[in-house]
Length: 94
Image (cartoon, rainbow, N blue to C red; front, side, top):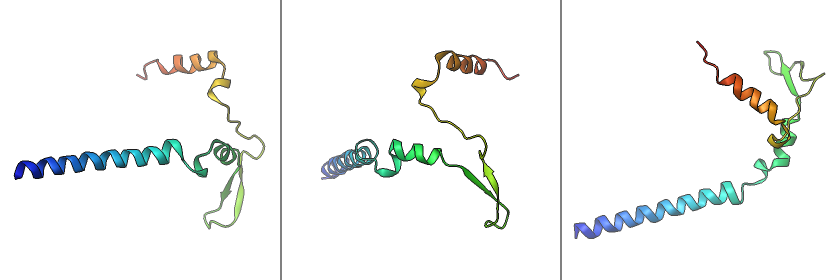
């Protein structure tokens, strides 16, 4: 009897784990929703950042008002630039 309970509990845990993993895969990989779409992320990254006083309502200025960041795809970055960054990182800090 105890062996049947252990087998049933183990099977139930395995089935629950597979179901939870499948649900997570569905929401992350197959149907992530509008918040994670590439076009929405690019729109958010392109916005300017307002800076406020400590009261939280009076605007002090804007970050990147004159110079905005430009986000590029990894494939658009020259390979020599990537190699230079990697070479700088390999040097010890001490």
